[in-house]
Image (cartoon, rainbow, N blue to C red; front, side, top):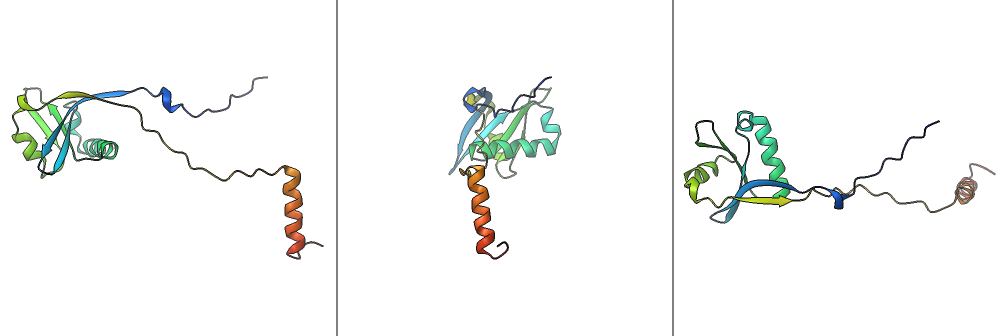
Length: 136
């Protein structure tokens, strides 16, 4: 007879680091994160929106996606007021670098732990019933 193994939560200290190529560009009071993505991603607007939202949630700043088209010129996706500013910068002058970050640590909801024994629980429940007049 085989017993199923108990499910264990993944250890956040063992999460692999993720890297991506990008740049942090100061645009006035904002610091914009430009993330290099596969050019095919830029063809799917829905996926682009999800990717921008994920990077924005992770890094807390405006995000612009950039992909190199097959003919060699960059294409951008992001907030419509920021993309023209990023696109106007000379590509060669953008300070590209590798960013590394760990997987986000998700906090599971916590519940109060009942530290009473089963016998104590029965006694407490019985006392409640007697007190409320449901059982005598």
